[in-house]
Length: 97
Image 1 (tube, rainbow, N blue to C red):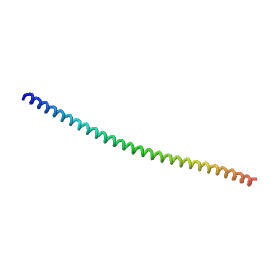
Image 2 (spheres, rainbow, N blue to C red; image 1 turned 90 degrees about the horizontal axis):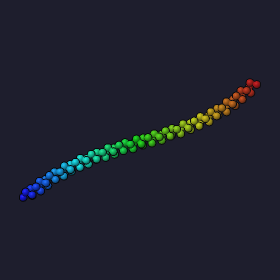
Image 3 (cartoon, one colour; image 1 turned 30 degrees about the horizontal axis):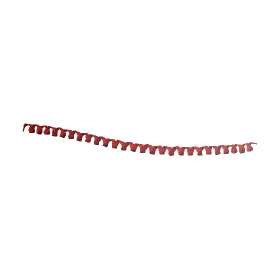
Image 4 (cartoon, one colour; image 1 turned 45 degrees about the vertical axis):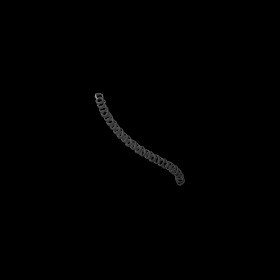
């Protein structure tokens, strides 16, 4: 009888310990779940930033290409003006003489 009571008390103690352990496990799982949510949120934010950076880089590339094209056009116009200036200078010299 005495040993039955001891076994029962040990069982009650172990059940209490198991309940406490399960509570700690549940709390740990909740912490892990919260961390996973934070990680997922941070990853999504980083993804959005990376997309913004890519979009801006593409825009900068397009702008740089436009500047290069305009520079080529300005260079060609400058050559044309130089040619016209030389021709005009030649015509003016003819009138002076």
